[in-house]
Length: 264
Image (cartoon, rainbow, N blue to C red):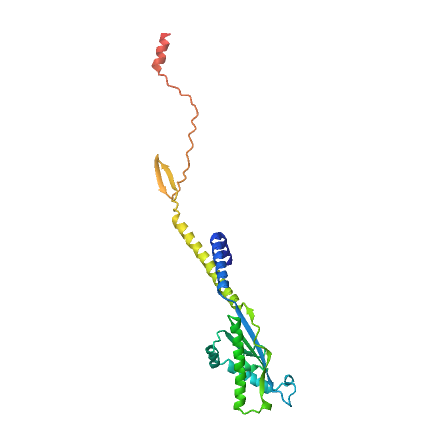
């Protein structure tokens, strides 16, 4: 069965098709109502050197060490152990930490920027989650420099480029759910109409009586010969004899002729 056959079945069973379409619309509406909208917060920080007499403008300094520290922090913040710590502290949203322009593979990037994206069901939860990840990055950077006994003049810090605030509404989860339900419902609906058409056609064929074969009747010698499914034999009809009128003469015996002559 190809696409044209399916379209013919849907057209022939248009009432069932309309019912399936109405049910699908109701399901999509229910998904839109049940799946809540989410809120997203994006925070961006930049690894910069500390302001001192040697560095007057930290934004003009671009060193390999800044990119390496950014890549290190992304690796730590996305590790399973640290991610479980977010959940233990009450962060229920989705957390994504990337380097540069959304790249998760830090080995292929060379950027001092760190992007933190948190998606949650509530705006306050999204803001709190982004602030928690940002603070975790600051503490990780400080602890590592303390362990290495880095002087204050050579320390690196995280400078906010985009603060963890101002949540925005996102409908990504709703659109994903609607797309999944619509695609699955469309496939199951078409399959249901086709199966229903096959069942109804089979029932109608079983309920309709089978016509009996036509019986041919042939008369042979005045008797009716009834044989089912056999056509009568074609026989030539004899034409009537052409009997032309004739004059018949009866013979006269000689005795009768003599008798008649004597009488005269």
